[in-house]
Length: 284
Image (cartoon, rainbow, N blue to C red; front, side, top):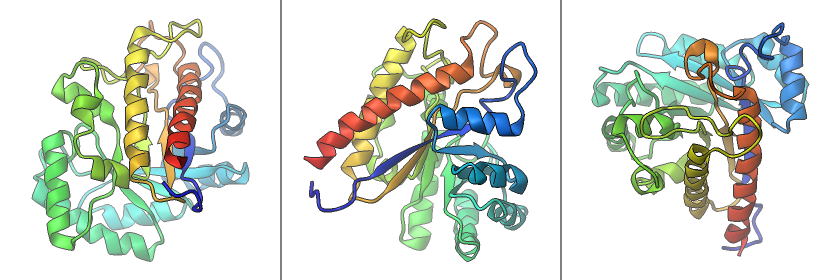
């Protein structure tokens, strides 16, 4: 790979969702404190809803903002306008519902492109349960329909934890998860939630700072995923990644889990190590 081009960048962002209820057992941190904690932990961005005030506070701290919205045929224009009010770097979109036909979802996604362009938004279609992308088959069907309609590839935000549960996979996960490398390489946003074939979230650590066996299998997948993505990088790309641990309050984290925020920080550090290792190979 040529080295005269600027190297691809990895920017990790902390989700306000993960920070829900933090610190455990105490008064929840204020917005400003959550931002301070995320920046101190080394995150370069934060992700949250279409709230202009929250986004402004994040950007004032020198961090990028990733905006999360949901949308369908009736709501997408208003939802994109709300996202634009945040001054976000990228928009993560959960589109339609689990029973939406791929051709319908693709038609909506095609309509959203000129609106997003006018609003100067970079939008990503998230792979997520209970949406139009809840299975690999539906996701790839949407990608095919979108390309047929536009001649372009569809840009997704991949969260492989959803596919892993749906397909009931066993490690090594990369054998099943990385079967569409061209679409993976096109992605500019991904959610890194530790998973296995039975659970969409598993602990990264044992609660004492040690890597869990399940976390080891997941990091093997992250290693393969970053290697796959970098194979398609030409130089100058920015990949936003969120160690997206869900809190106990929303059912992703269980009462017996280690602190999900501390696990997210642990995962971010391990992801950075794997990124640097694979980036060194990209430069050769």
